[in-house]
Image (cartoon, rainbow, N blue to C red; front, side, top):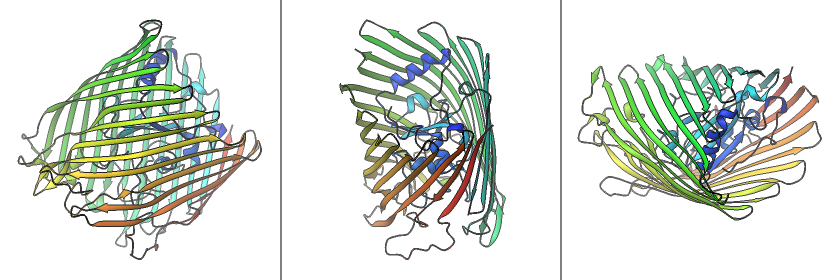
Amino acid sequence: MTTTAMAEVFDLKPVVVTGSTLHESQQIRSKVDGAYNSSRSASEVDGSVIQNLNPINAGDALRYNATGLINQPGNGDRFGGGTKIRTFGDWGASQSIDGLPAIKFQGGDGGGYGNTAIPTIAIDKLTVQKGGRGVSYGDGTDGGVVETRIKSGRDYTDHQALSLDASTAREGLAQGEVADHDGNWDYYAAASAFYGQYDGDPENLDEQSVLGGLGKVGYNFSTDTRLEVLAIGDRNRPDIIRNGTVEPIENHTLFGSATLDHRLNDAQALQFGVLASDAQTKWDARSRDRSVANQILFANHFLSTSLSDSIDYDGSVGAEVKRTNMERDGIWDNTFTDYAVKSTNAITINDNLVLTGGLRHTWFNNDVEYNGVEQDNLATDGLFSYQLGASYSVFEQTRVRVSYASGYNRFFEKYGNFGTDVLDTAGAGDEVVESTTMEVGVNQGWAGGYVDLALYNIVQENVPRRNNGAIESVEVDQSGFEAEVFTRITDRLTASAGYMRVIDVEATRADGTEVNSNIFWDGQAASVPENQFSLRLDYRATDTIGLWTAAYHSTGYDAVDSDGNVTKRDGFTRWDMGASWWATDNWALRARVENLLDERDFGTTVQGATVNDDGKLGRVFWLGTDIIF
């Protein structure tokens, strides 16, 4: 796996962990997963980077550091941050917490900060796992998965820390964490409280408050058995201004999981787990009441052994039961129950060549109610997900890789967003979106850095499109190029950069008509970014003073409708700068300039039209402090 900025960049040393220890019962699982993913691309971002760039909205900070994320017009400001990874035939990737099966949450509504469910102080790292990930993660994996790793008490001893931030946008944020380990027990807990008093600056926001908390407890029954329990809660309330009236919106997110790892012997381990989530948004002024709830049971067996002096095998078999309930505005009440079996396999030859293969079969069951009436015409179906890959070091620090992998997407969003089209038996109805990713890549390392290049093509089939009251299936074919660089320029200066180029996007309707980037309905066309750049520099002026800067630049967007008409939008630049001073070993002061160039449009204005900056928030100054007790 390749990585971008690691822990030495923007390091908040009291409140960041550089590397995490694994319990003995988890080491075989980690080794198997690492071998299986060796032929895949990923971008990794350390939690300390997220805290510096945007300590409220993790999704905003992610765009500065991870290639593969598609930042569409209007989604480049501080409040947003999408989860679309490489693909245009979906509305965002699923998310995994601590490597558990991937799920989707009900998104927030109306405006204000999103992506607040996990306090950023609690994030050890964020990873964008790229390419079809259906075998390992399941639903919502067309172009990849966003994985969040939570800090563990195993890495701390009698630790307490507090982080405070305030901005000229009349915002304040307080975050705290406590952690310890002793004997068989360890715990980590974090909490955050945010309040912004905007009073119409930006013009769509009156105020916003966010309260969140997280707890993670581990217990080691022995060196062979470990139990981990995780609980997360978040309440996000933006009061927006619409048509001159203040309208409150309530967003709630709850998540809980428990996993039991057991090592059978030096070569085998078991994992059993359960997770549940419930996310809801209520907007009374528009009669919106929407929620997505997930419950998953899963079990896995892991094997890591040598087949000969030169051949090693790492593999797993597993089973999963997932139930997702989606409710929308008192009209839709849908339950989707899926059963899956899966296997991952990796063969390593001469500690160099790694051959990987994975297979999963998922059975889909639908229980859809519209206005209290159960719909009997919806299909119950199943599909195979698969992955084949190889990686090989042609020189000591030059490793090439190739992979062919699939993902799938239940695309729950079409229920309600596409009206009742999905119920029409004349159309494609509730077909599952299937994707295949073909990728080749190379990673060239050197002392203190690396460059990673990836070229990919992704084809999504059965993408839903509205067509005369029914759903038709569309194929979306997209390809792109990505590059990441990390280097230590001097002992005190490090740099990392990323580049993404979307080479082509082409949608083809069921009758074979090519409609360019017009995917979901007539008159719609996806805005495709031309070039996306990011750059980060971290300079340690002294042992106590640090300076950093991070920038993101988009060169513009093209939206091509079914007739070939092109709508162009200008690009934009986001540029932040910051500094920190460790006055003592336990106390730091921080300063940051957000959006140094006072960007306000973020690609929303069509070329040739007058840019309207009125009522949009621009440059913001921050002061903060970190205290370890």
